[in-house]
Length: 160
Image (cartoon, rainbow, N blue to C red; front, side, top):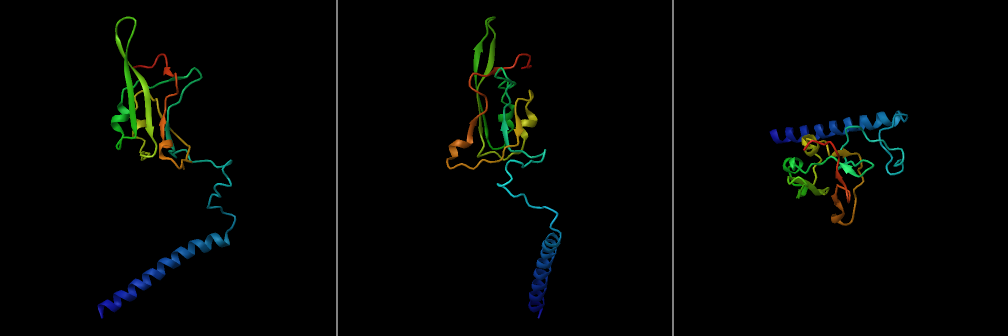
């Protein structure tokens, strides 16, 4: 007897859930002026993403091809799944001191969870989250990006 009652309770619960969903659908059916769905990709030119949207990690460069990355490796250490690789080299300055210089800042977009920990922990604010979101590719190798541009150097005045 209890199994029959439970059976009908489950059917009643399922019908109730269906009616709740149909209520929302019916509301937007009789109020067509309220747009809920973005018509992507038709509206690609006018599409505005929310300010809090996180698309991918980028390294901004100024007009002189300078960046702010000091190759400290903090972003690499804080990345939970190894999406960031910092390749640096030691250069000897004219006064005899050694200085760490960024060689490559590699970002594996296909592994990234978009947690923003790398951006939050960067002491020199060298990387930011961009709002690009179209990342569909046929070859996964295209999702691995070198963030620093060829020939870029550290911006003057950045504290190391």
